[in-house]
Length: 188
Length: 188
DNA sequence: TAAATATTTTGACTTAGATCAAAAGTTTGT
DNA sequence: ACAAACTTTTGATCTAAGTCAAAATATTTA
Image (cartoon, rainbow over all chains, first blue to last red; front, side, top):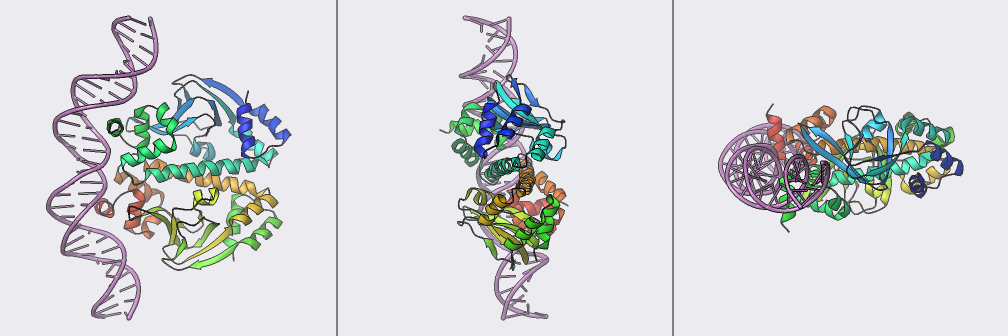
């Protein structure tokens, strides 16, 4: 059932057989239907998630407005970064935008795994590095730049995202209001 | 000479004696004077740096303008993230803003270190995670928010930075022009 | 320590994107 | 297949921040 996740991890760096067996034991699977929340703000994020299929977004509320922080699709590892790693309450939610199947691992079990299988730290290091690079890239795109530049960066870098997400979510992700994004898109 | 870096790493997670010895062997030290560039855009970042003392900033050029990406001070680990990890040419520079002493490790030697001392992957994982959290935090502050909100977030989170960096650099980091930041600051 | 250079502040005006409002188009459920 | 509920587009203003210009301060350097 969780073959996709183990394959993914195996692809990051090879795993020993006992480690794979242990992973199979601790990975849980859950199916969410459109609009369900995988995680709610105010909770400490206790799981690291992996999307087997589907589409989701993280968002938070600011001055009554719903602001999308990022989108996640097949083969993405997702975490409330700050909350999962530093054990503080999350200010973000994760909402499923299409029916979605996820695999997840409990925070304590993951810690235990790092202890029992020190080799797994390499997987953790490479994954953290990878997501760190992506985060810096999004940060880079966010600074300066006009609304139009930011939008077309996203279009080029994540074309499938543009097709799947709705205008209002893309707009709030880019720090625009939806009318502005609508106008940018209709300019040709 | 590189005691400060080894202490720092030891603080992340304990290191074995042979690992410490190896680290002492491969860590290099260099002193930069104000305005020198530690690294130039167009180069592949070959080193991971650690600031023992001093102050620096990373910046890039966009439409002829110099834009500060971040600041680094004592006990900060610094890398051109994308370039160091993915081995592409960096679009960023690192400039020393005060006389600065740095320790650095060569990319290949670091890879070798991970191979020879697999335990060091734990240090790498924890450091990558830590900097990932900080990156997401900066990203969070960058989105939405008015110029004033962004500035005061920085003031509260990094008060020493505000004292050390010049207005024009802080302004470009916040995505503002310096006149706008000057006006925000003079509002009391 | 005075001149040269760099940085910050202040002022007048412009503009990209926000806001408010309503029409048009799409999706969803029964 | 129709009504209800969303989502997107279009239009008319408004405003926060940008631009250009010049004066006021601070910092370097000789």
